[in-house]
Image (cartoon, rainbow, N blue to C red; front, side, top):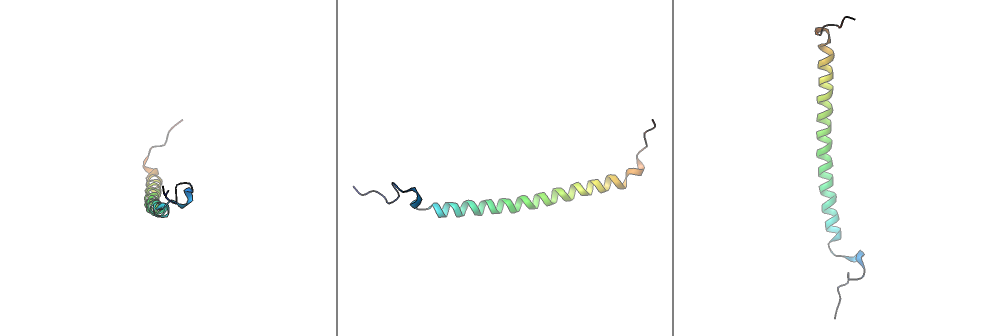
Length: 64
């Protein structure tokens, strides 16, 4: 009985490189999308900070 060449040596499993390349491609596309979302979130937070600072004079001051 002829055994496949990867039966006892897991390092020679065919398709592992393709699976790894697919995983890395998916991870790269996810990470680039994540960085784009992160940049948008940071821009929104800074815009809100600028809005609060620019409207600060409209809020009444607390009297103690």
